[in-house]
Image 1: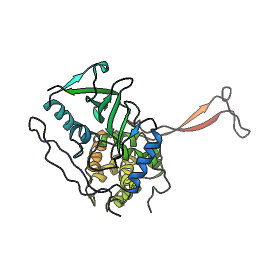
Image 2 (image 1 turned 180 degrees about the vertical axis):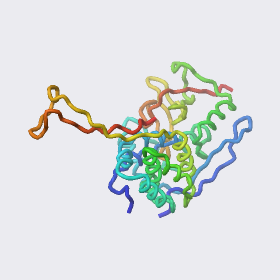
Image 3 (image 1 turned 90 degrees about the vertical axis):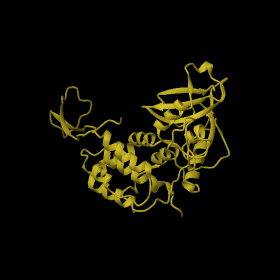
Image 4 (image 1 turned 60 degrees about the vertical axis):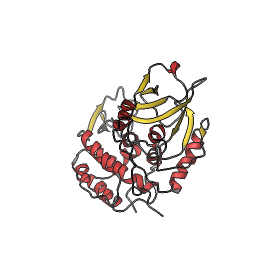
Length: 157
Length: 150
């Protein structure tokens, strides 16, 4: 069996202002253990829409939200850099949200999760990827991440 | 054969699968009562030896992947930082940036803990339990928790 933790590599990823962003990915195929965890999540979160994507070590939620699914970003400082350099604007009130806006899940300063808003009414729904498992469209709080706070962001231009 | 074989690492494996960041993983492991049990059941020396063995070669399944993290957090719950500090010097047999980062975070946030056994004399007049073998003043032992998860 191949090792679970393979050689990680990275791509040249920059903010709009040209600041390099640390990233890494691993093309090792998912193991039976990864697939088992995905199956367990599908059973646990029955109200969510589990997209037919495989477990993947190539990108995580932040890679989906900020790097077009090409790589993984795990350092919250890099994410803050992207938000600043790409001139995201903060949205203070959830009532002002639109599909396409970004949600960040924040716990003790760490950005534990992120996703793209897909629906705002009747409830907020988010497209995200759960760790190294698969992609899920879920109600904002119906996921393994219980944040202290949410932040909402949008690129206006 | 690992010293962790008899422990249920399901919660740890779940956290590993859904973790987007190493800090999320660490928080989940620090909340895991199973890892507290592991820390209670083994000495720092035993945990460090198991850690050295676990990182010798790349893990081949999810349980093997999470094992070094579990051992590190168990070392974090030890009353002395000595063995956690020694874990920092262990050479990994494979590349795992999260693991190296987690050791640094655990060391930076380590707070010395104490494990004390105290005897408290119970007033028999208000004691809710009684036994034929107890004297008029009953004593009970309580083990105080070492630390609280951050």
